[in-house]
Image (cartoon, rainbow, N blue to C red):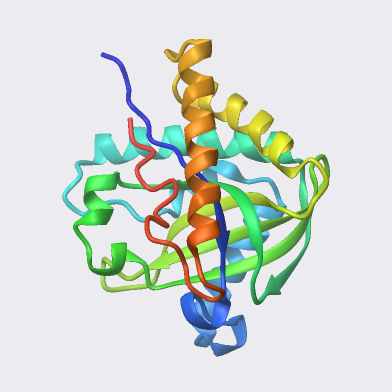
Length: 221
């Protein structure tokens, strides 16, 4: 059976005071949780981070396991292409291209109030291969407790060759996640995602996140 995956590459403006909260504003346990995820990303532990992503409670263990295996592989591809993460620092906002992964699927996230999102944290980082960039963590309370909802790696649009670099990484990521795509299908998907992303950024007001921010939610086999 063919596996279907959904991936979005987005240009987005994050005003942390509106769609996320500074780490200092989080409770101690929430701050520890966020720091733990960042520590695992810095250590290159893709599978461990993927295992922390929220999954729908109604999914059976086998489906959750398949989802986590695929997401762990996809995140490992991204981490290899961007390069080792270092020097993470919280940032108030950024305009960036990103590739995001999440558990569940689009239908699940769309069924939840506010798309299931509670808050986001944006970190400016340095990637060993791609240079200065960002990591964005999204959080949910869909289960009643704080959990990791999304992980995104990206490059600020002001970085030299950011669009070309994110396109190259996006191609490798899509080939891994959807190996059945032929060349034309892959290029069409990548082009349409970038165009839609840039249109969303142009239409956005500072401090307001464009509609459809669910960028990569639903990377589901």
